[in-house]
Length: 160
View (cartoon, rainbow, N blue to C red):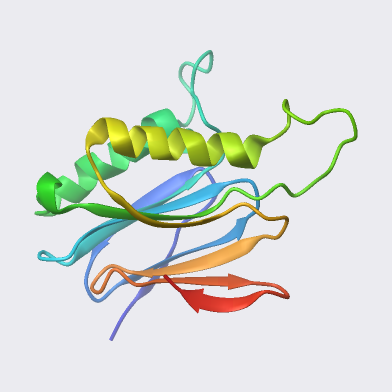
């Protein structure tokens, strides 16, 4: 029987099979899920911003450049092997439109780019990304199978 573990905003959790990790309210935020298919362990982070630069002493789970590595360290402590880790991401929407502010406020795009850069830096392949658009997402990640269920209002549900 699986246990659903909620991952809050600016938070991450790691777990083993048969648990399901879930986060809601992914607008411009990115939900990143990392999985070891052999050990059947994984983690999910709900990342709000791309970089922690200039924010010393704050919640490191909030930022792509710190949360991804912290979560991966915890996944490795659960028995995962780095060479087997695989990632999936969702979120990164442009939830609001501000005329004349085309580059500054594209936080969803910047979040997705920062998460992808961290994965590349750490040598973890990104299998699939469901990012962008102008709609929020709720995701459920099965740490046993690596299946990521993405649910959206008015856009249905899919498994990636």
